[in-house]
Length: 489
RNA sequence: GGUCGGUUUGCCGAGUGGCUAGGCGCUGGUCUGCAAAACCAGUUACAGCGGUUCGAAUCCGCUACCGACCUCCA
Image 1 (cartoon, helix red, strand yellow):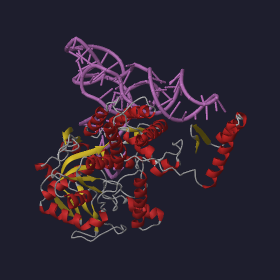
Image 2 (spheres, chains in turn red, orange):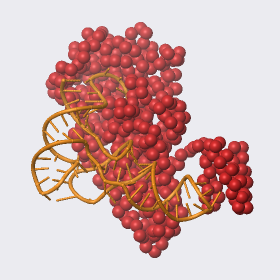
Image 3 (cartoon, protein in one colour):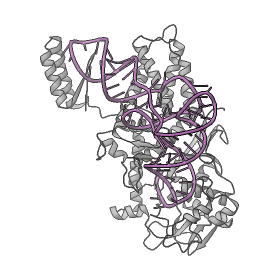
Image 4 (tube, protein in one colour):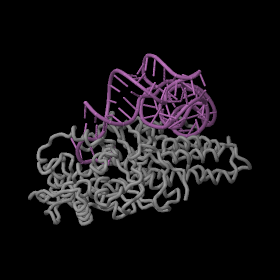
């Protein structure tokens, strides 16, 4: 199988030709959420980025196993030996069993992902279900001499590892710099070095989430689950590992170290990272408290949001920026995206009703190759979308008889839009609550019929009065040739 | 402080040496009883200074400003 796909590999900081280890199979692992709160716009970007990659690889003909984990064990609030597990904290605040918290937010996450029309991953492993695998990896790392046990906790020996490997090769750091910049935190006495990170933590008496192990009753370290689960489901070596840029260091750096130490080989061929979403120029994040959840977008229930934004508008907004660029949230930008999306979807739907002619007045093949090239160039969705908009002008022109298209080209054009708009980008017509049903809809239809009658009688005064009244009620009339359409604002 | 990245037209956002990115907005037009919607057209910017080059938003240097990571974070 051949392709011309190039992806930016964080490891080499270059765009590299994508060549799977075992074609036609592709292993894709993406870091999913820690389920202790509602998903926000940043989660959407991560999920959308790798959903499009998954869809695109499938479109190219690969058989992809897409693994996206759910972190349900919880991490500590900071890297010291104290702090509180986030899920535990949430459970305490909400008076729930930790697994109730996990289940609740996991369900909500899945709902949001479905609303964004994302495909379900092939496997969605949970950290809590892979304690044994994680312990086995700890055993391997201990046996290899890259970890040590202290008081029932096991730590990764970064200094030792760095003697034969480069700790920091993914994030472009040198261990000397890291050492000189490490902050002194309390409670690090157990570690030989501040850079060392936990593989297993002994649980203090108040810690509810705990499992038995050869070292202590405790819980796995913060970076271990991804190493253990990616290996279990994708093998010792796999093609792509993705996640948000904020996971680059230390999370992914630690993963690399764990895999090298435990399995003796690098696990990932291409590391891909999506950039952050910013709000007023600053990263949107849970720890910064400046995030807007997806449900808040969908319901319009947030001070910074002017109105309701349907899931597809959010998705299109994200796709109109390249995944490696930061993307700044604003109401204007979001509203612009929504309008553009409607235009694109409308034209895409119109292709089905186009009639072919003897010849084409538009270069369909050029459009196809431009679209293909955009995606091949590190999944450049904004450029792809720009080309699709060029085609929208043509489609409209075809509808209005300003252009002609051959039968052969029409088939190509149709499959181009279906492939990219629906299959690869995963856009759908927004499933807005249909106002055309129920008594409200019937009433509006009845009123519009009265107006229509008035128009036929050239009683425009009455017709306009009806329109003005409806407008003041927040109902917009859209007169068309076939009759009036309407929508509630 | 260290490392990395960014500064593009009213807004969002592509683009890496010469050719209009695109979307939204705005302006004009077509259609329509009028308006809206829809469609069409127009809307040429690249932080500052210096350098390389026949030619730079695009390469190099400096300055200013912004951000990310360095602690959990998509």
